[in-house]
Structure formats: C-alpha cells, structure tokens
Image: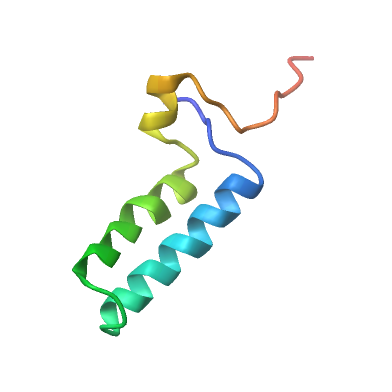
Length: 65
C-alpha cells in the first residue's frame, strides 16, 4: 500500500470527513453523512483505492538519495 494522498488533499479529507460525521451524528444531514468515515480514513491513512485505479497521486515525489 503506497501513499498516494498528500498535502492539501489530506487536510481537506480529514476536515470534510470529520464535518460530515459530526453533522450526521447531530442529525443536521441524513445518514449518508456517515460516509465521511471513509473520507476521514483515507485522509488519515494517506491512501485512496480510487486514486490507485485511476493512477492519481497527490503526494509529492520524495528524493531517493
């Protein structure tokens, strides 16, 4: 499992995922808001399976020196 989520993408996933779960638990939005757990988890693990399928990588390249 390679890291493919980085930088601003990761921060947005954690913030948006947390907000979705919080809103769903407070009955502000419907139960679909609990899908924020998936968004939050991908941000925390820095890995997105959908990105792998499409060959997307938002993590900056690291030096191999």
